[in-house]
Picture 1 (cartoon, rainbow, N blue to C red):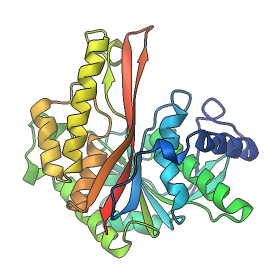
Picture 2: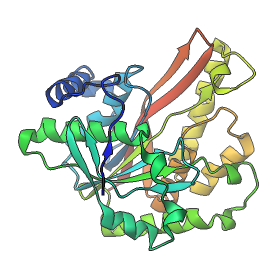
Picture 3: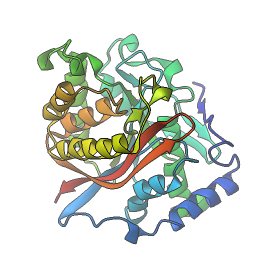
Length: 312
């Protein structure tokens, strides 16, 4: 089975191992841990929320996301919940390894097959959508860098499960009801079973690779982004993440159904799936927020970093 190849270098990060490691190390060192808000007491780190914006836009956002993992044991496997930007499937897995300038990351095919439960491959696999998908590639190269910066040449390869998630538009737009989300419920149940088998932490680390709102003419909105709109959007996202913090997948999706996703928040399915599979056991603490406004087209993208925590 041919491995996927990273496609976003050298534009976003260097193409050689030595230079790439130096690039990621410098990014981490430039963002001291003291820049992060303290984690709530009596909680354990189960994973992180990371953006997948172009590295050239904001390395601090990535450093804020991955910095907490520097103090944790390296995980056996990483579940990466990304976004299927070019996927026609709501839930899209892959079985291929991934080759980057930092080596080859190993797809855990056995766990991928556990999640799909022997379903028809056309239901959960669309190979072309994974080719060049930055929401997986960017998370993987950061994880590879962490492993190699921690353990050097003897670092074990990163093992991962890549799951691209859609926007759950049918539910958000009121076309399908909660009980009729068959694939969502089946997959969240399969993930819940995986969490029981491999409790999130050292055995299985969760990586949620999402961005926030996409606003303005660049995204086909009939308006220009203004400072007032950016301030309103910041408040809108604070309310959104407060809803996420409650850990209730249905309440989270109903909030989107009521408000709509006219701001094109990029991560609805990934967060909903995690909340449903976790059944209220996870708390997500935002640690970083940024709004990237481009004056040339009066458009903006927002993104957040965070910790996925579980009470001890």
